[in-house]
Amino acid sequence: MKTSIKYGVAWNDSFKLGNEQVDEQHRTLFEVVSNLVYACTEGSDAEKLQETLDFLVNYTVKHFQDEEALQIQCGYPDYERHKQLHEDFKVTVGELVERYAKSASPADLSNDVNRVVARWLVNHIQREDKKIGAYIRNSAASQ
Image (cartoon, rainbow, N blue to C red; front, side, top):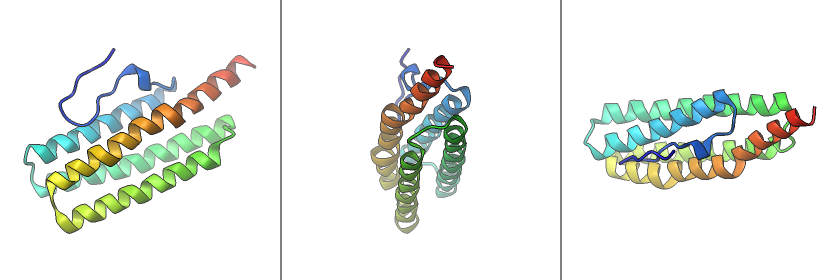
């Protein structure tokens, strides 16, 4: 079932991995990204934007830690490469945060969040995280 959304990126069931914790965290990330884009485009004050951006950064780090712990727990063979993708994205988001701190432009932040964060999130879940879900399902089926 698809949902429509005016800002950011919409969650739908095609993003599910089959792990309740990870799926819920992904849903939350979609919501926070959309809320941040909405806040940028609807004229929220700089303090609100910074709070939302900080939450997004901190929640993403927590999510990555949880997802990596799951990979270790289930013996995911591509853990190191996947962890490096997370590390690279944290650097990218850090650069985005720095750009916003220097410019304080809600329009630029909105563009960056849509162009960088939302796109990365969708692609990463579809191309990389889905592999984790499949590995866990296949491992469980073979036992």
